[in-house]
Image (cartoon, rainbow, N blue to C red; front, side, top):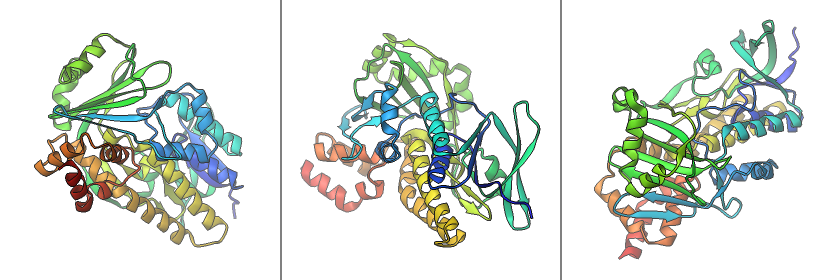
Length: 402
């Protein structure tokens, strides 16, 4: 019988993969993490690490490293709806501020932490196939950029390789709660566009855009339109993007005084849940659950999945419970936590005007400091949308407004 060289092979070394590898290596397991990229390198991202993600970095002992990169803290989320604005604090006691780091910075920090924990990291390694036996997944086959094809074996292969996941394509997990692409978004970076400590969002009919500070004295500006307009608008992305910003004249004026430093990068993504485990395999981050980027939850979701999956695998390897039981709990916990945000996000991503009752509620939130902070924490993934928009909480907000 061929002996497994590793306990876990993690495919993908960004925000889902490296933390998973790091946590398992810290627990004493033999971990290999591979990625076709080399680090530092960029990837399409909304950048934001909301308070739950910041709290995870603190637990892992990595928050001070992120602060040392000079990434500016954000303490206010501002939502400009045109007739009124909601401005609140998204933070919590253990994570009072938010960060929006470049992925060239954050991913390198996470990869280094995985290596320091004892995981073997192979950069520039492409997985060409997942290896099976009669019982399930037993490893991967792949190659470095100039090396021969090799086969590595493990007790479990973790796919952390995004919604295009090679691992997911190979194991064909059940998929549910599917929704189509809803929003087509693009972003770029500007210099000379000071944001202070604010994250600003502008909501207009069939349009939405936002801006916040990132590394290197740059400001990320992101915006989008319904996916139905993708073909028409892709012919002049810059022109349509700048025309969109004119819907908020004061912001457009600030943009005209700034300087664009990069090309536009954009995408549109499907919305789905995948069963995140099966015989010999597991999925974390976007590989297992993906939703539109309008609420910028991807990094925080990946961090949560890393902790949940690493705990489940530790329970399996140590004999505390079966693989099916431990990973089943991971799936249930993930789904219960994210489903309300999934529904909230996909509704926002349609860019349709809010129903009259919701519009009235948002107007009642305006000017109520407690309610505005609570709304900011919903968008930051701190408070469940189900709780905030519950009839009881809505009645309370209306009562205070009256």
